[in-house]
Length: 372
Image (cartoon, rainbow, N blue to C red):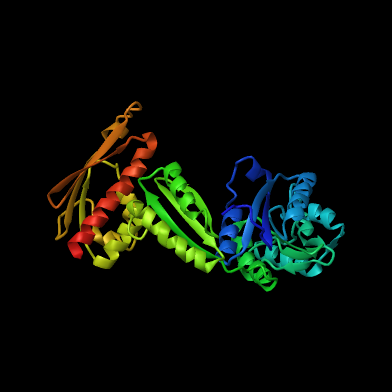
């Protein structure tokens, strides 16, 4: 099916700030907000970042509002001279900013609790909002947000710090979008594929999916390829899932819903199997990948050997010797005396990540066989 389909109730995300544009910080807000909206069946179609410039923020807002039904803006609501989002939004709405006394009192009281006898005058700009906007209180900071409807479009203006804006998304933005009909029932399935190239599997799966009313998607999550399937057509979706699972079976770890390291963690907890591991290959990367507060009781990387599965790992010499011209590398793994060599293409610095997941998969299969 073509990916060029008509989508209603499209949402756009705009993050403002020189610090994002210049790479000083990562724009985690847009990622997290998009995840939360997608889990609720909402369509996030575009992410944009704009610098601290009224003109450029205004341009970004207008561009997104032209093609979307709702806009969520984060950042630029602080007390400094580069916090300009509210001024750009005022120009988009052609609505003057008005001083909101209740918001100023909340700012005043919060700053006094933090030791300011007389709060800085610059904080007063945080109490300015477009005329007619609905204020979104911020219990975790001085920058309240607001919501407004303009030309039939829903606009939310939120502060930048994640600890402040994300609770506002959960408590105000998501409920408002749901009430406005933005929530759509979408069937979704995904699998992590291991040991196959993106080009090879995409060619096969897209051919299978061509005649179905479903959308396929791919994400590199090294050393995995995540294959995603979405549809609002239940009949086509379930029919295609059956065909897809048959095609990808050779590349699945378990049911394909988890990476090998996560699957191994879960296997240790359910079987209560203790592993005694002597690792001469990964330099501690294997231990880091599978040790959690819950699994550490089942892992022994040193010390006495209790009743356990004994594992010794060697190899990955090409990685540690930085042999950039190597074509292949290998891991030698011994599980309770059973020796096995795992050989795979040498991938330079990524070989360590690949090796760890490969080892986890072998241990997972060994425990499965031993406890079944």
